[in-house]
Length: 210
Image (tube, rainbow, N blue to C red; front, side, top):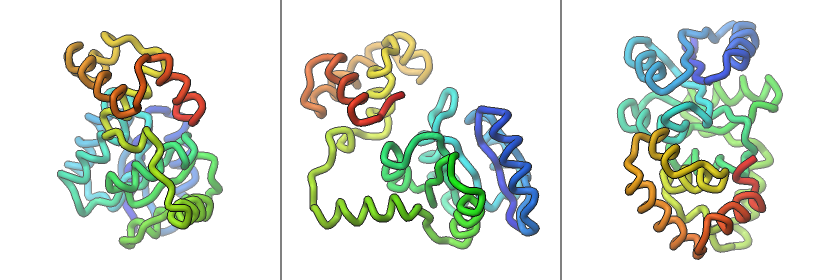
């Protein structure tokens, strides 16, 4: 039996996933969580085989949670289930240790296949993503500028691009304002830009924010 933890901050999504996965005879939902604290509590206290993790979580982002899970529970597979298109986060999630990446508009059969493959020790990527990665390897293209950022820099870059105030970024990420400003300067330097407006334009053009 595959014991599953569903980690998503939207109750409707969790309920929908439970309804779908309960139909599979070899799967059971052992727990659910809506934020990072609940995720780590569930992982600590339950015998889980996989975590279905939303990449957009309140407080710690899904990527932050993924990184910490891989450090503390390296044998526990994590499958990212996200509303964001693959070209936005999939490669970064896989590099951070995710066993796979599935979008929420995927077919039920694809989600079930991904869970079984990741639990068995494999990696799951869609045909679309596999083709994209193959194309990039063939072209030997340089990395996009945002791929040079660390996960935390990427997170803050997206928040800045979305117009989030420095004080609000600091509060949400439990950082000091001076630390956020340091991140901002480092991001601008890596992105070869001078203003927040340039970051926003780049993020919009590359579909990194809504």
